[in-house]
Amino acid sequence: MSNASNCILARVCKLAGTAQCTRLCSSYIAMHGYSGDGGRVGAANVPADYRKVALTNSPARGDQPEAYQIADAYAATFARQFDPDAERIKSLYLFSREPGTGKTTTAIALLNEWLTIHYIGSLQRDKQPLQRPAYFFDVNEWQELYNQFNRPRVPNDIAELASREYYRRMEHARLTPFVVMDDIGVRECSEGFRGDLHAIINHRVTNGLVTVYTSNVTIEDLQSVFDRRLADRIRDMCGVVQFKGESKRGLRR
Ligand SMILES: Nc1ncnc2c1ncn2[C@@H]1O[C@H](COP(=O)(O)OP(=O)(O)OP(=O)(O)O)[C@@H](O)[C@H]1O
Ligand SMILES: [Mg+2]
Image (cartoon, rainbow, N blue to C red; front, side, top):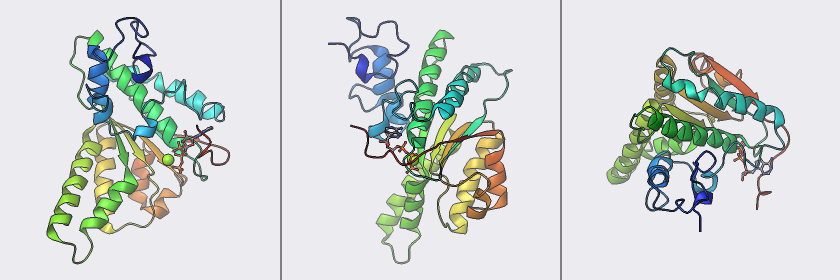
């Protein structure tokens, strides 16, 4: 049986669905690993529920025609990553006040598109594809890690585990060429956490790295959640996409 339904490259792969489309295909392994949970998709840290979503098959597509028109056009700019003289690839801010409208789903569809274009484009240019071209960064989870090692009387071993994981994720979020910053509009945060978040965003913006944010807070209101400096950095070279309607969570079968 063909392995096409397990592989994010299937949409563009000439071998998809043929007798050569198996779990032993070297490109499948490059993207998903021998186990199916590794490879570049595994390194991108995408939650399992969202791993196979593409712009074309996204459950949110039908309800969000305007957002997907922008997302399609945006994905078409990803090929510029190979051209140092090309116009810079913008960042994108996916917003709706309502939860469950498909922001995270769409951000991951864009991430999968980036992975695909990076992998195929690198091979076409005789370049080694990066091991981690894209990274999904859950800002809420990251803040929870921060809180775990900044609580009074937390045992050393627990604090150490949490802080190691916190800094590991921070490095990926700072350095990976394409990052989804999921749920950026986090609630209250301490000065230390805000400083770290600022360091990530500042580094990314300064170095022209591409970020897709998702948020329940308007880009204008970010300055009341964080501060003016951080909000201004996020707005640098960033398009805003509004998601409409009510929560669709639980609809998918
Ligand atoms: N238009 C839609 N039709 C059917 N299912 C949808 C639609 N949009 C999203 N979903 C499903 O609803 C769930 C929530 O979507 P998603 O996580 O992308 O929402 P979100 O906008 O990121 O929400 P939040 O603001 O809470 O983070 C997912 O399982 C997704 O597949
Ligand atoms: Mg979300």
